[in-house]
Length: 467
Image 1 (cartoon, rainbow, N blue to C red):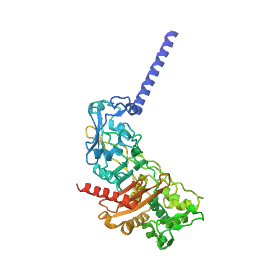
Image 2 (image 1 turned 120 degrees about the vertical axis):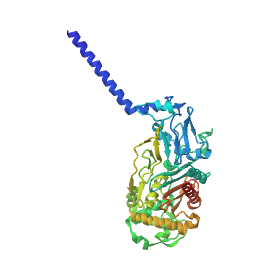
Image 3 (image 1 turned 45 degrees about the horizontal axis):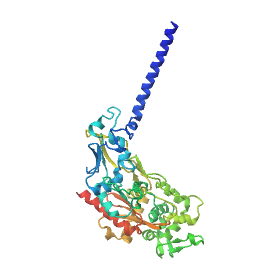
């Protein structure tokens, strides 16, 4: 009898362990199943480490950018489209980590805990993804950048939708160059410079300094004047001298912003002090990453300024030199906020996700707004940036765009010294609410090099809306 009892207890223990194992495996299947499916050795999804089974990726107009056919991943028939949308779509090996094929890989494949890989086998991939980008606008941006390394992006500042996102250098996924990993021509080719490029902002940072001045000095700043003699001796040390791009003489705030006077804005930064300027930079999000669709994150901009920093360092920081490094995504977000009454709408690159039956899927992304600056200061900055175009860049050059803008020519002090050309801004137009950022490495002049690029792309946006 005792033997039977012991055997019974043993069997009960085995049953309990078996039940626990079933529960554990079921829990793991629900929580980790999508991870297991997306392993490179899963031949239903990958071949030789390359994604082969996934749904279509299209632009906002239905143009197919990538899809699965006959057991392989294929891209647009148009070479220029492949080049222009590479960093948005991504490659099949995941080298471009910010591409949607990598970031939304499991959703594109269509795995779910009920059907498992059935849809993958039957449909060569389960779910289709329509992006917010316009392939034709991206092609115009690629053409505008030409041989420059850099980035161009355009966003709807009312909705947060990314219309254009191009990064160069790029390459044709259908004809990968043999020297892609060794040639200087393709240096940084896997990086989406809009999201992860870190650049000295140059005079575009004067937008931040101007906002800080309006916040802390107030409206009286318009009544004040500064003297620019081209060289400002900050502390008696020649190496710390702030050098201006011209001898502006006596100059007011609005004119100093339009002419991008280094000495005026250097002096304003010193007057504000490192703490106030740092606080404004933080409020504008320069210490945070920027997210697309709540999934694809940018690098964090780097702003080095704190209490006790020397006047010379504060002054140089205030004109966008110093050690500050900014992502184009962060600068575009600030432009969107200025254009949109101080509110920054979260960026989005996903227009819709749908399954093989055409049913829309929820990716869990919710658009939100963040009040970066007050409505009043946003209005003042909009007027200042509109004046830049009218008085400095030339309204006739940007006819029909209602453009508000700020250029930047960032000086890079290294062995291969060069300037990075910036042009940022937005269209002050309720029917065409678009903000933009242009960065061209070795571009020399922001207004002369990057400005025309912005014009070309914005005109392409307008033409696309007319079609």
